[in-house]
Image 1: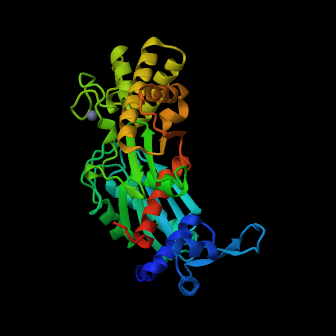
Image 2: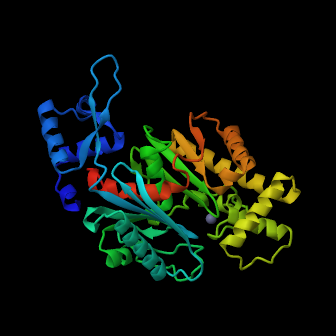
Image 3: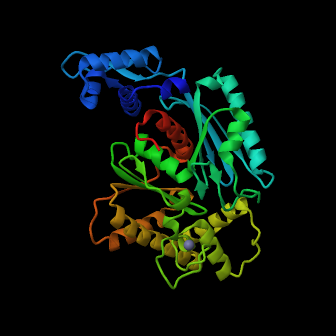
Length: 398
Ligand SMILES: [Zn+2]
C-alpha cells in the first residue's frame, strides 16, 4: 500500500486528499473542489477505487434534487499507527484512513523505562494489536510519533527532553530504533504540533485558517498552524511560547532567563513557588506522580482562598493571559485552544487568563477561545497518525 500511494499522480493525490479531509463527498462537490472535467474525475476515481483507496460511503441528504452517492476513503486495506510519547505515559492507537480508532493502548512509565525498554514495549504492543486485527505490516502506512522536544525532526532524534523519570532520555534516535525493531516507516514531531494538526484538520479548528494550541500542564506547550502549515520553532521545541518574557525582572526560569511565562504559569513553577513560600522543601526529589498530587493540593487550596496559593495561581493565569495577548497580536489566529489539566480542572485559572487577555487586547482581535480541544486526550496520537497520512497524500508535504 505504501508503494501504491507513493506512485499516485498529483491529480489522484489531490482527489484522495479532499475525500480524506471531507470524510464523505459527492462526485459533484468533488468536481467543484478539484475543477476537473467529469471525464478526468471519473478516470481518477476509477483508478482510486481500483486501488481500494476510496469507496462508496453513503447517500447524500436530498436537497430537493436527486440523492447522490457519497464517496469516502476505504475502511480497510490501509492503516496508520499514532504514538503519543509523553513524559509519564505512552499511548498507541491504530486507525484506518477514515480516522476511526480500531485499537488503543496506554501504559505508564516509571524510572525503569529507558528508551530501549520503552521502544521494546511500544513495538511489542503494536505487533500484538496488528495480529489481533489481522492487519499485515504491508498495510500499515507508517508510525507517527508525537513526543517531547527539542527534536532533530528529520533524523528522528529526541535531543534533550526534560522530566522523564529515567535519565537516559538524551539524544534518543527514536525513529531509527522503532524502524529497526518493526520494519515500518516512522515519522516524529513534537506532541503539541501533532495535536494542533489533529484539531486543525478534524477538530475544533476544522475549516479555519489559523489556530493556536496551548497545553497547560507540568510545562506550557504550544503549537501554531497557519493555512495547513505548522509554524516551526527552533529544534521543533514545543516550549517557545513558554519562554516568552512577560516580566524582565521577574522570577528566574529553568531556561536561565527571568520572567518567562513558564516560570509563572506551569504546574511545575506554581508548585515550586508555593513550596518556597511555605518553606515546604520536602519534595525536592519528587517524581511526577507526587507533583501531580502536589499541584492538586496547591490549586485546591487556591479554590478555598488560601492566600499564598491564590496569589500564585492568579499570577500564573495572569501572565499566561499577557503572553496570549502578545501572541495573538503577532499571529492574528482565528482560534486559540487552551487545554491540559490546569484548564480542565481549574476554572479560576482559565477565567483569570481570559479576563487578562481581554483587558489588554486593545486591538480587539476577533479571536475565539476554546476551553479544551475536540480530541481531548487523544489529540497527540490522532495528530501523529494524521502526520503520516499527510506525508503520503499531501502534495506539498515536507
Ligand atoms: Zn524561560
